[in-house]
Amino acid sequence: MFLTQVAYQIGNYELAKKVFSPVWDYFVASPPHNEQSVISLSNIMTITQRRLHSDILAETSSILLYLFLRNIFVTSDIKIKEENLFCDNIKGNEISPSQQIARLIECERVLVALELSSYLNDSSYTLQAVTQCYGLLAPIIYHNIVLVPVVQVRVFFPVPHWPFP
Image (cartoon, rainbow, N blue to C red):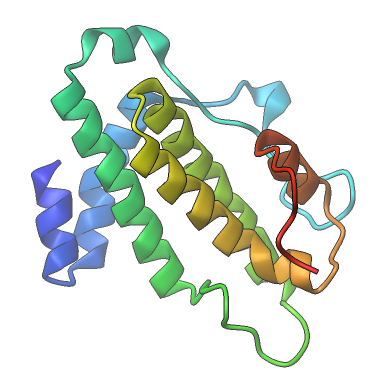
């Protein structure tokens, strides 16, 4: 897992993603085939919450879990840079459907980081996960694009006052 961080720091994003992929597959359960995400922008699209393997979490040291958590944020940052998913990067007054899908898929990954940070009882990483997820969804919300997955994430993060218009 250190190789992922080093590859990221030197800018070798392909290596970082390649090295992290088996680690992700080890810790994160694949959703059952009947619960796969539908990749379309219709109102029936849903986010499939990926879950961590609870038995593996129980057997893994907190040090290794923190490394895994940091690497989730590293790979998420790589994806945001590569696909230009910054919250303030909007051309014109709309977001392309492919960018909407990319934002929602990345949100699925960040929700795993939220689950792990909650498991580790680390409020700093929990705040980072929530902030990153909102950053991914902010342009969709700002442009009043109504999608079921955005509603699902908003329900997952109940907040008293939504900060966007």
